[in-house]
Length: 446
Image 1 (cartoon, rainbow, N blue to C red):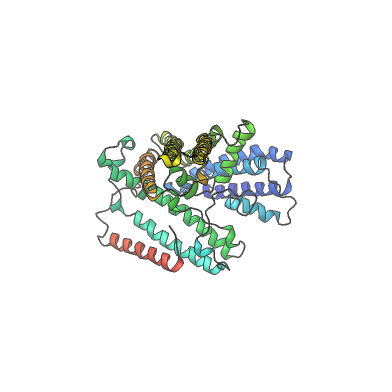
Image 2: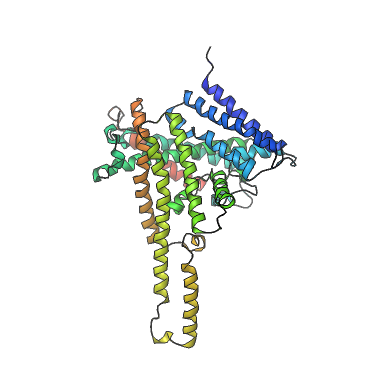
């Protein structure tokens, strides 16, 4: 009798976690035993990818989880060799090690990264909400997200299968844009957001509801859409920061420990961005390989993730030029009233300060800047929506072509003629009504 690849994959993953917890709790930092175990952990990560490829899971599930072996390996490097975590002296060291492996973000530890999304206002009351209120709120949101996923899967919202023919991801004719936007947001981005958020909220319900974890250990996975008016804000504040600690720790090790770059500096800053996006690219490439994506997927995946670096650099340049221009205009004398000794001295001081500010790119001082005016944020939102639609198709069209080749037409309009006409309006009504209910009853925030 053949052994199930799914069972073998589960055993390998359990063994990975067992070895990691043992090393964290039984070996001190710098221990030679940690280095001895590294080759075996690399091999187990390879086995996980192979067994995941052979499993009976769906194509989309494999694609979204196939990169786990790589992220686990990066987190292992982070915990054992870069951050060099030592839990041997803690009384509850096994639980602490499990927590580090469970959430990866280091919530409540000295290594918690910045930009972790804050709890919504309804969860910041004094006293804070209890476990029951938290669990009920999370469950209500998951149910609504399931309805939203059902709406996005409706064939009437998807383009014809021929729309995804080879090479179409690089076609920018006007008649291609409705399908491009549908592929980006209806097939790809929003379902990915909902899938990841539902998985996270489900785990939060399990651990908080059982009393094993506190509510504070499960802050939101995603940030606010209000921060998405730049690509830097979209990827750095809105999109999930689940892998920020291991990826940023790895990139910082390369830039400051290995290359000895000064910090902060332009080279160090953008090299960090490059390394983080490259790690994400490799993770998603492995997911494509595990799922069996064909037809130039690796080129499209690399192009998508590396192009985000170019977009961020472009944004930083535009903002720097804009702020420099505005600063220069504000320093111009406006009439004789400004020609007195005090005004002249003030102008000199202002010029010195302005020169100092001009030497520092806007990207470095962004956190200290005031909130951008409404019109700038509106322009930024349009830019981000269009840019993501342009670049996302480079990555996702080969994925959809593979789905169609294997008979999965869920990302296309096939079958729309057999779907009852009343179904779409009904689901839209349920999603809209559920959104209002979440906002009124549970104070949900976008």
